[in-house]
Length: 110
Ligand code: 5GP
Ligand code: ZN
Image (cartoon, rainbow, N blue to C red; front, side, top):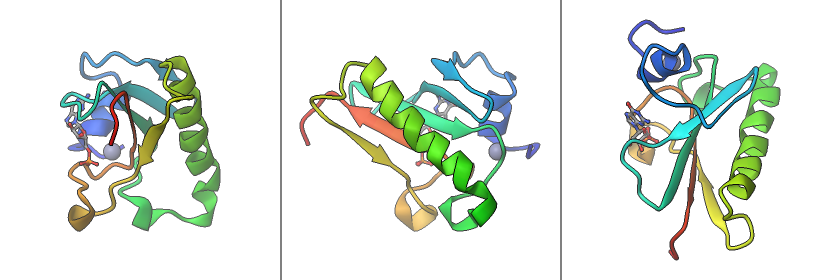
């Protein structure tokens, strides 16, 4: 838990963000500024800054994020048409919130 981290505060329930799904390891909620009709964020509960900070011990949580991406795509009804699962990595990669998260984007044609 990082005191000033927005996603840590969301994960801890300190905001009014509604979770679409919660597991022991992660939560899923809607992006506040969606770039597609379906735009969800899949966020580990533990604070990890970015993909660059992952260690071998984090393998299970990475697998969990991907499996939740797959599950949420099906739940949102976009699995067959297709979707994007995206990690922005560091500032130059478009990352603006420095708490690891996986974007699920769908519902339009790219
Ligand atoms: P990044 O650019 O770091 O990969 O993605 C951060 C995402 O978090 C952005 O798409 C942004 O719209 C979303 N976001 C920023 N602040 C909030 C918030 O307070 N609530 C929610 N639900 N999403 C947020
Ligand atoms: Zn955090």
